[in-house]
Amino acid sequence: MNTAEIQAFAEGFVTDPGGGFLRAEAATLPELAGLRFFDPPLTGYAAADNRYYLSLVDNEAANIDLAPPAFWLREARTVISFFFPFSERVRRSNRKGGAPSLEWLHARVQGQQLLQTFAESLRDRLRAEGYQTLVPQLDERFWQNVQPRYTDAEGRTRRQFSTNWSERHVAFGAGLGTFGLHGNLITEKGTAGRLVSLVTEAEIAGARPIGRDEVLPPLFANCTMCRVCVKRCPNRAISEPGKKSIPLCFQFMGTVSREHKALGRTLHGCGICQAALPCEAKNPARPGIRADKEA
Ligand code: SF4
Ligand code: SF4
Image (cartoon, rainbow, N blue to C red):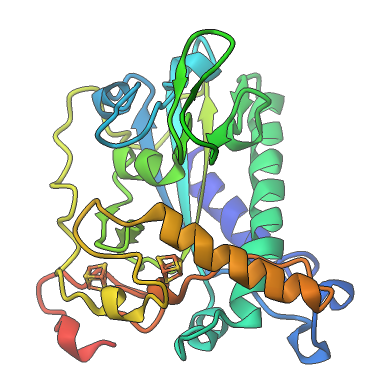
């Protein structure tokens, strides 16, 4: 597949009337049936030997223990990273604040299932062309640790809230955007959306992967530090760059999950700090965009 084919495949997947929408049987309210989760994605490519990824192996400061592409696939050549922006309806629904909207939570839960199905389908297409390919977040070796720090059976430290494949960091390394004060990625289509990535042996025709020694932008280049996200967070989890309190964020999201569970709904998420922001659906640091006029 080349870049145009991958882009068309991804766009078709999330706008397909047969599959890209919330099904009636999964909707918590009848009027939510047919909710479209995503807009067409941005796609970034990185070389498997991208030096940034290697810098994240057992990185205490970033609280990441990234397993580099060659860990997932010995002959890995390319990382493909997608940012799928949430649809306007999903974003608009979460602008009120206080509690996350049902639309947002459905996009977080059923939308995420859609993206995983998409990633598996793209994986299978690339495999059919003869290239080993996998989706790290669906691989049996993938881990995210929310428990207190411990040492695993192989003697490796597993820090709390760490992981061996961070979609945000993978996307940064693939040139899709930079980080914001809220800890999410800010792309040219903003921050409200979801990320997914694949590792493949294929070299994708037409792609300009971020190479081994390419200089990436400053970590917070797209964030104007306007602090709107700080005021939006209902649990005061956001403060300084790189210092978002994951425990406070988890605490609030746990409350959200429990409240919905009590109503018989299996939903989780929050995203209040991704809506009603200058960076919600665009890069506010781009010249010519008045960030203070965009919220
Ligand atoms: S709302 Fe402002 S401070 Fe927060 S991430 Fe977006 S641009 Fe940065
Ligand atoms: S997702 Fe976390 S950081 Fe963002 S508003 Fe909700 S609780 Fe705050």
